[in-house]
Amino acid sequence: MLYAAAARAEALEMNRDGRYQESGIRLRLTSEKIAEYAADDPVLGAHIRDLREREHADGIRAHVSRREEAQPQETRSDP
Image (cartoon, rainbow, N blue to C red; front, top):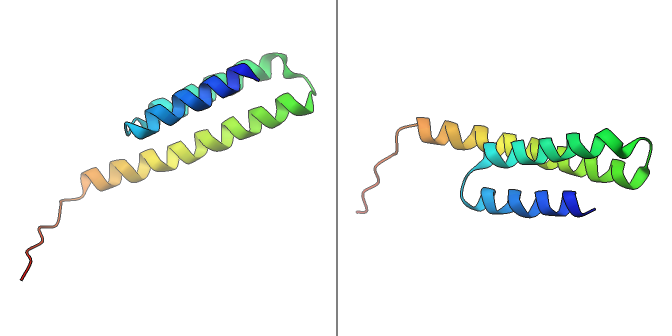
């Protein structure tokens, strides 16, 4: 499925840039678009599930990233 592959590739690039929330949105919008015409097609259903799982993972990464940014950096001194 071309839409799913393009969304995965774009999401991967966004993840590399730390743009996890944008990545998740891209994946969600694509899964919703495919769901509009997927009906009971098992192949399209598999693509939808995969995109939604990746969206969920990106959401977790975004949450962790925000928490790490909110925590003060520890200063480390070498002896």
